[in-house]
Length: 69
Image 1 (cartoon, rainbow, N blue to C red):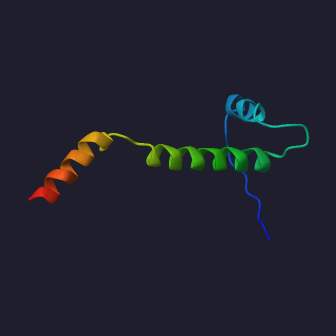
Image 2 (spheres, rainbow, N blue to C red):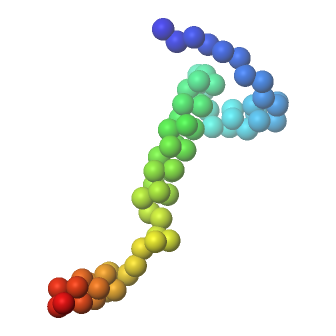
């Protein structure tokens, strides 16, 4: 059984959240979709982070050098 709670937010933020809703959506519906979307984006960003990546050509060259030793 879900318990409800009250959170205090500004009217400005409430109105912005409403923009993500459709007719008949509760705030729980909207916030659940926003949460899932943010979670998927976070996973995507983590998996697609290229800061520590090297080009495939360089990786192949490194591997080739290792095997030649």
